[in-house]
Image (cartoon, rainbow, N blue to C red):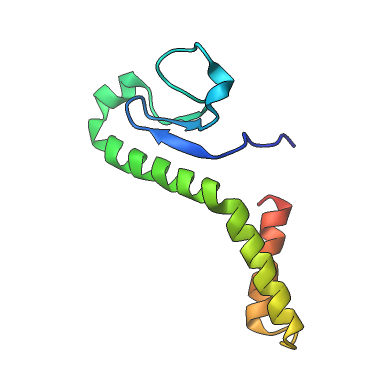
Length: 110
């Protein structure tokens, strides 16, 4: 499986793209900086369905926030799980089961 484009990412509303914030990666490539990670819409579709733009922009901002904070959230989840297990909470306690299930989904790529 391929690795994802490293973050931090940003949403560029003027052309509805999600880009990296690594500005060294595209020197001399125009007005926009960073590598395009995702294009949310085509100019043609924006003309046909302008009512879809606010939802797509909200989705883009959500994706950027989630991706930019994923590593910290994942590490915090692993830490919390270890701490709860070390505290003597039984391995089949619903909280431990839920945390371990989530970790397995994250680590399994689903």
